[in-house]
Image (tube, rainbow, N blue to C red; front, side, top):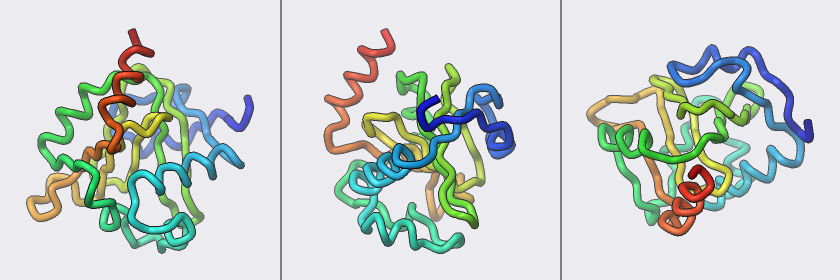
Length: 160
């Protein structure tokens, strides 16, 4: 399947919106390229530093401050309005990063998990954290690409 394989265990981390058959594991060059692109757009650290983050270090503490960031509870409402049927789901594990393609018609929702979701064109990213709904952290975070309007318009056109 060109870098994809069905993954059956990942859905255990999902709260809603996903079934096992909706998840395809992304690996190899495609995985590396997608993660590298995500880091370039949304993180204020290098790709190497991103890969070197320890399991207990959190990417949401190292996000680009120039990107428009919407905090909880508004972030969930904006996320729910996004028009995409395929998103990538990334989670850091003790063995590295797991990246899956979700082909569900529903946007997946996680609570109290370190999970990053984004469409292929990187119009936006949704970052769920282990501290969701914490009044001090104000996560999850919805973060717009600086080219959000143009990229999101393409997502909407693709879905209609």
